[in-house]
Image 1 (cartoon, protein in one colour):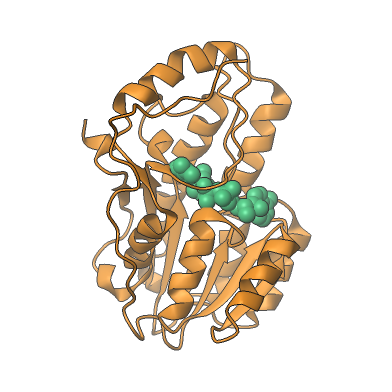
Image 2 (image 1 turned 60 degrees about the horizontal axis):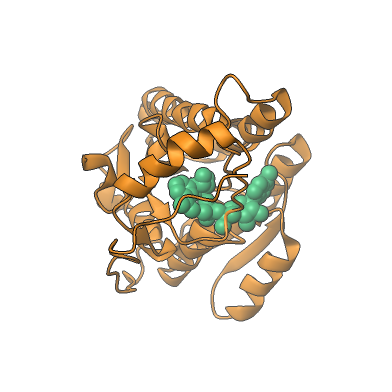
Length: 269
Ligand SMILES: NC(=O)c1ccc[n+]([C@@H]2O[C@H](COP(=O)([O-])OP(=O)(O)OC[C@H]3O[C@@H](n4cnc5c(N)ncnc54)[C@H](O)[C@@H]3O)[C@@H](O)[C@H]2O)c1
């Protein structure tokens, strides 16, 4: 099995980022965050809640959500244990939100095994598409009907550098993250008149526990050196959460249908 790609020793790591909050930015607003039990989703849920939002924190992991809520009794965090790939899961999210929703961050996602098109199995392709595309679609479809009143609504989809090119994952992950771009742009156009914006963030490499299981020899041989040669920095999840919160908030009121990188300059190369 090929080794996971490594970042060159001289690469600047965990690019400088100072935690801050913008008090009251989400006061009076309900924001659903999927994948809130870990990594980028967890950092986003905390930042929204610290800025006054009522957060519906969604994840498969009950243990992680319990820990999140228990550690922050001062914040308005409602845990919803749900699988976004099924109707029962998205129904539970709508019930947990309990009415009008301002924001949705579709962050739950999986990485693939780096398999190229000639190798990928139906099971692997379906596993990735089911969460990254179908889960994002199902959650958005379920919530869009309770978004977009006078206060408007804002959806942020989490893409990847694999939304923009073919050199950051296998065929399943790359296809899924390109599909997220299509979902984002279609939603932005279709719901502009309802005052609902939809944007995507394209993170570079982020220090999270996302499971990496690179079993494809071919994929590891091709993509590994590409990542090692081009990846400029490894970001803290809070730095990506800051970009998501910009897109989620009125700070980006004039922006919809955009794919905004949060990648330490990776995409500029
Ligand atoms: N970590 C990176 O370097 C990186 C880079 C680019 C994009 N991303 C994207 O960012 C997003 C978050 O990744 P992360 O690194 O924070 O990962 P993570 O594994 O730390 O967090 C993802 C969370 O999603 C949850 N989840 C997975 N499937 C789910 C399902 N069916 N229903 C509900 N919850 C589910 C997991 O339980 C987990 O808590 C993903 O969409 C990923 O593709 C990550």
